[in-house]
Image (cartoon, rainbow, N blue to C red; front, side):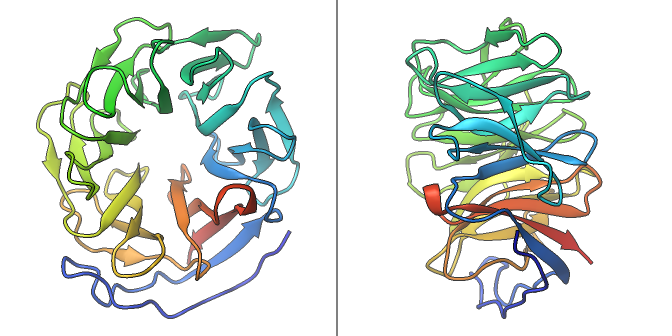
Length: 292
């Protein structure tokens, strides 16, 4: 496992707020070797364990490691591909994830106590990227419901399936605020310019908090004050930024590898670290950034 203090000088940002965006002081470390397809890590509620998807076994499966990269273990073995972010419920006893085990990529819930797996999205429509709220609802994005991609919510038993966006183009990558009262998502409204929107779980009071650039994969901080994103603003590569959740101001770039896309940020439960994926597909590796 590579680790250490690595720094770089940020380039100028966009016209919105990224111009000369400061770099947060930090320590950051690579969690494992590149080339194994590790991607899309999230923390378990205890803050000590990272869940992630990896192709290291030949197909995409769910794995776990300690937050320092140690104690690597496979959480669940599947005959299909279990993709994307793996999101735990509030006590970590259940996990939601997307999988093609039924032929069509759909959202499933795994009960870690007895191994039971429940399908919670419509198996006739491609669905991906689930996130579990503190109020026990799951949000995900799907091709169901018209438009290119829409956001849906559902109970962990598959009940109360509800479409909460209905805009042209793609609405995707939802993530809950820690209190479960708001969602952040990335949407292009058929413009191909993805921006971050926040809205209620009912789909009301939607407002855009970014402009310009290409903003993806929002992830709310535990205190609800900031959102981490992967954005391509004025560079050739996606970079990880944090910004104020209220209006997208205070854009700040964390330290990260250069000359490569950095994507899928995820905050630790104590708000002191962000994990992210650096690199593409099989060449990807996970990194952890810690605020000084």
